[in-house]
Image 1 (cartoon, one colour):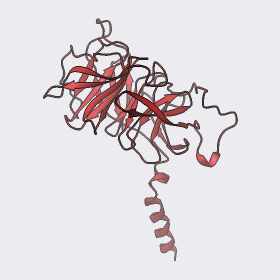
Image 2: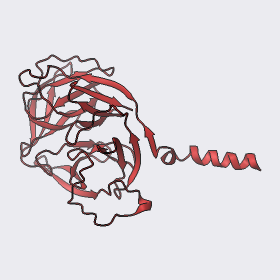
Image 3: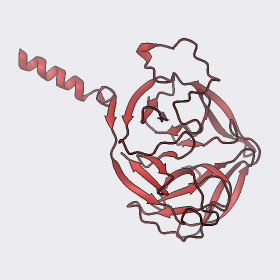
Length: 277
C-alpha cells in the first residue's frame, strides 16, 4: 500500500512540470563579447537585444541608441564572426527573427518604425528595409519581442503587455493587451490598488521577453530581487521564478533578452551579453 502511494505521488510530480518549475536558479552558459572598446567613436553603451537565426545558425546582437553603434554576429558557441565595422544601421531597440518571413527584424526608437535586414549569403546584414514608419509601439523606448506561435510582437507598457500584429503591410496595430499582476500568483488574486498604467520600479521598465512557453509566455526582469519572472498570457499572473546568480548584471532599462532557450543580460562594464539557462 505504501509503495503504491509513493508511486502515485512520484507520478504526479513528474507529470506536472509546472509544479517542478515554479522556482529554479539559472546558470551562465555563454558570453557574447561585443566589438570596440569604451571610449571608441560610436562604441555603444546599452544592449538592445539578441536574436538567434536558425537559418544561418548565428546570434545577432546589437546596441541601442544610434544607427552607428555595433551589431555583431556570433556562432552558437559564442565566437564573433562579424567585422568591427558592422553597425545596426538604424537606432534599434528590439531585434527578432521572423520564421514566416525568414527575416531578421527590429523595432526602432520612437516613430522611426520597424525594419528588416537584408542579409548576404554569409548571413551578414548589408542593408535595411523600412517595413513600417511612425509610432508602431507604445513609447519611444519600447523593446519589441516576437512570439512566433502567436505571430505577435510584445511590448511592455507600464503594467501591461501590448500585443502588436502586422497589418496590411502599412502599419502595426495593437490588437490585445494583458495586465500584469506583478509578483502575484493566481491563487493570491489581484492586489489592492493595481493599475495597468502604473510603472513598477522593481522591474526593468522597457523590456518584456517572449519565452515561447505555453502558459508562461511573458518574461520580466525583477532588478530588485535579481530574478526573471514568467507570467501567463491569459491572465497575467506569475507562473515561474528564475533566480539569477549573485554576480548577474541587471539594469532597469534595456540590456535584457531571450532567444534560443537562453536568457540574456548585458554587462555594460565588460561589454558582454551573458547568457543563462
